[in-house]
Each structure stands twice: as structure tokens, then as C-alpha cells.
Image (cartoon, rainbow, N blue to C red; front, side):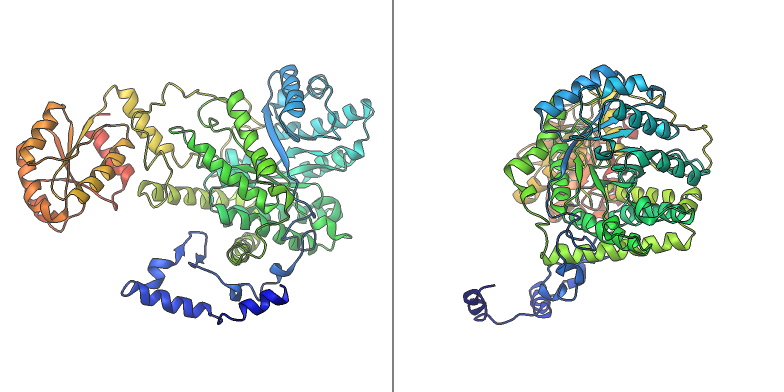
Length: 618
């Protein structure tokens, strides 16, 4: 700060955080400050409405520099992340052609190849990597666990035969010791022996990371941010601990581990999560006394989340993935994969894949985020979030350690159960609209249909599974899944109940409640018939019958319901389902005369719509 600016700011009196709080309480009058202004995140800590310099003055992490231990601000002094696109491979010649085109024309700097274990042959790998330089491009391979060792050996042999300096090849082969445990509910088995064999085979490829910590599985299963981070750290530490116990140097072991995180739409918290991940992993590795601090640098790949992607109004997925990619880029991860917007219901096509790539190119070429290292540094909010997430995730990490480590907790199904519980909690928030998925549980596209665009796909790869599920596995049902099931059921039934808005009385209230009710019933795919208003209840009922309405929703003010609702209910005579929009004081009196159905902001949207589907035998 210059002398001039210091003099300028000295003219303003210092205002403490407490003074701000006191002022807010005065403005809120009788409303409790804690209830109105404190955000109950669900992450294990609360978030204040504002932060000041006071909140970070004692945070040591806020004083560190990029590339400096514990690497909160980045493991390097630049922010040039790799743009990665993953390719599902069945035809290796076609995959090679696609990969070369991506590298030449699209701005991709990292490739991911996914294929079944039965395809792991030297011939296929040679075809796949023809004219692709493994030094210039980061190559990442994912196949069945039991084929990872063979794949590493084939890659090493292939690179040598091509005359490539193997020590300069960069990439990864994904071997996840707990993949079957988390995904298939099978005991992990002798994972330590298998992990050591994989690492030994990869010594010929010093820049290849071969042990995958797939925190993205937890993210896709609906885990909270602190859970994803805490469990990922426990996963990494369990592997590191077992490897060092068998004689592996901490440096060598840590440099073979790669973290693959998901990115949720919780923008600022995701920035803080990745910063906290670098910090905590550095502290964990440092506790093993590596010869060089550089071994404490985490390798971070980030992929946009599947949990919050939707089939209906799928273009909104682009908005979600854009903010997700941006938070990861600002946080300084090493590479990012943006999932195409149609990933949930079909095999992505050229258009959706191009859009996904361009989302990252925008962040680089137009936003220039790659030109700034840790642009969030110094933000009172993000620095405090980083600290809060780190503390909460560390608490989860220690709890898992107290239970004997990640492997033991996963084999007991404890981690899967905890994550599945979080999934259920978040879905309940969606059902009650405390959490919004635009286009799904709020502001749906009234006329959209989806059943014909959904492509059913199954994976024939058993990933080494013996088919014996013995413990709880992760639930990968997306947040929107239950709403989508409800709406698709309406489509497939051939019935589309007509919902008529009987708007009458107070102009502001009837318009607000008709909009609310229209959005409410459209979430189930019902046909909405809205109106500007009626002078009498009788006119509204007649209009509804002219439209052959199945449901009549009375939209007015609370005060007027005492008069309008009994009259409208009597005129329907049970021919249509009658609904009152709101929670009026006279609700009990209305129920007493037979009115059953009320919808309001406290309604469980999902359960209420399921009930109406049952009424109409959908």
C-alpha cells in the first residue's frame, strides 16, 4: 500500500466486525440475527453474512506464497492447468483418430482413455497411441483394476520401442485399491500387495501416477464437500501408511498418488476445498519425513459433478459445469475435465463435447484465469472458508483414523453409509426446495419431454468383480433422479393432467400464487392453464370445465380464501381435484368442510406430486 493510499484510508474510522453485527441486529428488529443471517451449510460449520480483515489476521495460511509449503496457494508459481477430455474406447483406431484431432485442433492438452480390461493388449495400445507423443501430452488411462499392472507394463514397453525417453513421459494409470469396495460393495482384499506390484511396475515411468484416490466417486454419490475431502485424505493416508510400513520411501509413495476430485456447484466452497486439499495433504506427507518437500505437493485432477446434472432442461447443465470449472481453475488444480451437458441421458456427441472443451478455453483465452496464481488469495471470505473446510475435513479424517483407517471403515461400509445418508439429506432438501435444481424442481420447462431422448446404456465390464456384494455400496442416483422418474412416468402414462389456475381477488397475491402453483405442478409434467383473473368464482369454475381441467387450483389471498374456497369447492362437487395455493389461517376451517389439498412453500414438492400421480393412476 502506498503512502498516499494509507493516508486516504486513515480518514475513515475503523469499524469492527462486532459493530457491523450490532447494526444488522438493529435493522432486523425482532428477527433473530442467527436465524436470518447465518448460513447453516450442512458441511459441519456455519457461514457468516460477511467477513473482515479481523477474520484472517491470525491465519498463517493467508500469509504463504504460491509454490511454498504447505502449498495452499498452489504447488507451482503458475496456473496453467491442463484441459483434459476423456474418450471411452471400444474401437481403438477410431479413438486414435479422435485423439489426434483433439490435440491438433481443439486446445486439449490432456487425454483420458477409458476401456474395458479385455481390451488391454499391446496391439490395441500401439494402435491407440500411434503418432501421439507421450511427452508432449499428458496421457491418462483407466481400465479394470486387475488389468492395471499389465497395462503399465505394456505402456512402458511401447514407449521404449518408440524410442521415447520414458522418464519424461507424463500421465497416469488409474489403479484404485478401493474401487470394488465403494462401487460394488465387496471387501477390499489384499490391496496392499496389489498396490505394491502396481507401483513397482511403474518405476520405469517416474512421472506416471498410478494410485488413484477417486474422491469424485464420493462427489457423484452426493457427499458433502468436507466429507469428500476428509475421506479422500484418509484414503491417501491409508495407502501411504501401508506402503511406508513395507519399506517404501515416503517420497516415492507420495509421488505415485493422484487425487481425482469432483466439483460441485457450491462455487466459493469448491475454491476453498481445493486450497484446503493442497494444505492438508502436504501436512500429511510431511509427517512421514520425506527427503524433499516437493513430495508433499498434491496432484489434483478435477471433474465436474454428475450428482447435480439433469436430463430435463439439460442446457442448464452448461451453466452448472461452467461455474464448477471456474472454481477449480481459480483454485489452481492441475487439470480439469468438463462433462458434456448431455452426459446423463446419452452418449455425448461432437457438439456437446466441443462445448465442454470451449468452456475451459473461455476461462483461459477470454477470462485469463491461467495468468493469475491463486486469484482468490486475500479474500476474507475464501481464506476463512479454506480454514473452516480444512478443520472440518481434518476432523473427519481423524475419525476415520481412529476407526483403523480408510480401508477398515470402507470394508465395514461406514464411509458408504455416511455418504449415502448425505445423498438422502440433500435429496430431501431438493424435495422441499431448500436446494434448487433449476429446470427440475423449480422453473421447469412446461412443455419439454425427455423419454425419447434418453439412451439406455449399460457397462459389460465387471472390473474384476466376483459379483458378491457383502457390504453397503455408494448410491450414485443423481439429485434430480426422483423428480425425473416422476415426470417421465407422466409422459409414459399417456395422461397429462390439466391444472387450471383459478385466479381471483387480490391482484398481487393471485399472480404470485398462480406462478408458484404453475411451477409446482409442471415439475411432474402436468399441463398448466394459467389465467389473468376472474370476477367471480362461478366464472372461474365454468372456464375450468370448458378447458376440461383435472385439477383446479384456487389462487388468491389468505384473507379471501375464507369466502372463495368454500364457494369454489362446493361448485366443483368433487368432479375435479380442488387445491388451495397457500397456508391460510382458515385452513383448519376449510379442511373441516372437506378441502384436502393445500400447496405452499413448506410443501414437500416431490411427495405431493407423487400423491397426485397416484390419484390419476400414473
